[in-house]
Amino acid sequence: MEKFSRLTSVALPLARANVNTDLILPARYLQKPRSAPFGDYLFHDLRRLPDGADDPAFALNQAVYRDAKIMVGLRNFACGSSREHAVWALFDHGFRCVIAPSFSDIFYSNALKNGLLPVVLDELRVVGLLGMLERQAGASMTVDLDACTVTAPDGSQSSYEIAGFARQCLLSGQDEIDYTLSLDAHIVEFERALPA
Image 1: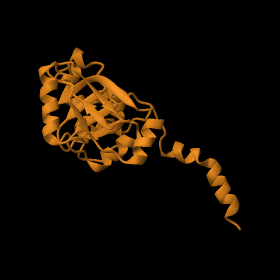
Image 2: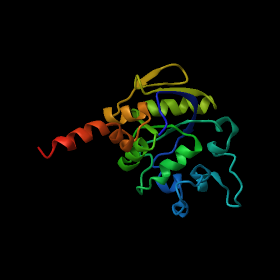
Image 3: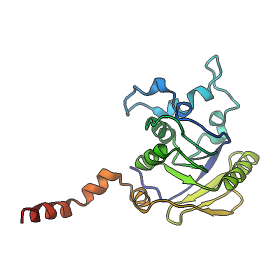
């Protein structure tokens, strides 16, 4: 897993509530192996017109957002099925953080386990961020995991909360298995003393 400490990037606004995992990654792509380029399928059906051409109105197809690593959405982001593939699609496309007023519990957990930081901010604050981003296409934001802050395009800051263990894993670039393996010496010592 990649380390996450502080990220400054163009932020893509997605002013839509209840974005479900089937919109993020349509079910027909679920049979592909993890090695597949899931980022190519991100928001596939929203990004394309009926004839298959890119919809120029969809933010992900606009050049100004090509290198965006932060996405700002509305409440209940990634609701629906529990597919981890939705996180893979966002991550493989290049996103490292999604900011929203709320996430589905399973998506939130899957995001943290795959190196994607889900940040929960107050809904009024998120609406304000979306307004700034829509007025200034291509504006940047900063997400700081050390300080647990989000800095808006206008320089204003908001704080967010994240569980200590999840935060430590992201900061160190370790998933749960890496963390367990880092305790190998303690595990061996425990097992050695257990029979006694």
